[in-house]
Length: 238
Image 1 (cartoon, helix red, strand yellow):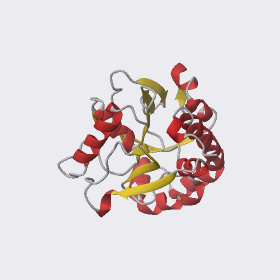
Image 2: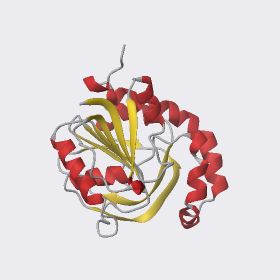
Image 3: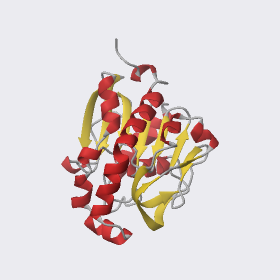
Image 4: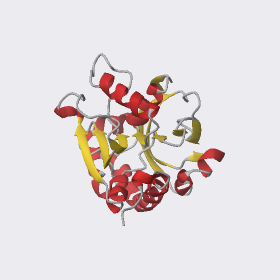
């Protein structure tokens, strides 16, 4: 297994964010596989010490429109079955849910903006306890059923299944805990249709991000750091 993190990226600015900073501190090499540059058929999903599937504006169920989802789901199937550290964020969380046999489908509403998580007892006992006192960022219109055997970690009023773990090695986050304030403007100029649909404005989102972003960055780094501590291949060098 290589001492590297492989991130599957659908949109250039939806990157690892705070998680990438944590991985850098730990001496991990970070490699992005950009879906837009071709098919996902090269990487061995068992090679990297961490696999992360990032967000994007497509549905986890849209195989017919986006053929790359089939090999990506196969990668997740093999990775999860092997018991190797795997994280999904937004679309990535939905794909993990689907890989574990759960249904993914359109929500009744678009959840867009900053709001706190309601942690379950399992969530408060997990690394997500770092997120309990800070608003986190949300931008999604799909949701999923909780996979069999998963532990629900967090919910919001708009989305019952915000985060779950499966075993010790899988973490799925519907919310964008990874978002960095200095990269946020890209969201506003790329998805104006979603902003209008949600009933908010770019100005309001910009202001909320300036107000909450730094606290989330600190909390998210602590959360990812604690989660990675459980894996020998993700420990610090030195």
